[in-house]
Amino acid sequence: MQEFARHLRGTIENFRAARAYRRRLAEQGPPPTADAEGREIALLVSTYQRPEHLRRCLASIAGQEGVRGKMEVVVTDDGSQDETHLIVRQFAARARFRVQWTTHPHETFQLARCRNEGVRASTAPYLLFLDGDCVLPPDHVARHLAFRRPGVVVAGDCCRLDEQISSSMTLDVVCDGAYMEWASDAERRRLADRHRRVGLYDWFRHPTKPMLVGNNVGVWRADYELVNGYDENFEGWGCEDDDLGYRLRAAGLRIASILHLTCTYHIWHPTDVTFPRTWREGANVSYLKREERPIRCSKGLIGGQLGSPLPMRRAA
Image (cartoon, rainbow, N blue to C red; front, side, top):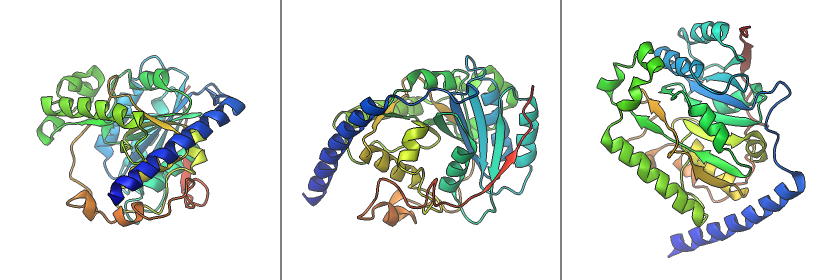
């Protein structure tokens, strides 16, 4: 009963926040759709010590259709000590859009910090968070651009490919899109079910669901700044996406699913050493469930740690 009462209070608060957000939007007008150089969307690709996965991810980004001149890319690295920086540099030399790389010394899994560093380095008014172990269908970015709406956070997910299938993910396969036929029936059903549930949760303003999955999330920069971005107190695996979703909803934003239009495809790899056996055993769960959660986190875009944005040459 106490849990039900808590969720009911959260739902009522989210309805009130949504009304306040709509009033503010009516007064201030919608966010800009492009930066000074015409870029509409920043792709923020998080990575750590998976250079071959990243190479395939970037190849799929290079193959995006219908978005020429509209996007920029920031690879947000968690302190890789392998050839990751060389792969990004080579990619930037060939790309027909701006490519940047941010990094910092690796201490532990710091995904929230990576993503905030990427946002600081970018300028486009719309943000698309991606993971460097996922590949994008050729219309993925265009579909996100077409689906964006003021006051809406776009929730996606990835289709998980198993180890055997992932071993066949060559660069040629990435370029010809054959991997899109490799999804198992179980994965297709899971994503379809998630899409339906996102709509249901949004309809009655559930205070904690749907959970955001940070490998495929679209959000306006102005809304991300409203909550001060990811909370960098989350270190080690998990819960930083959940927390961001809670605070965006509390700020009055809706969550809408794009899974009926597109998803990314996750290339298998061993799990991180900080990955818990169950979600409840995660090191960050107690912090996620803290009693007081301000809409603006104290250690985020402002107040967070600063990494090193490294310029990459932009191809002509």
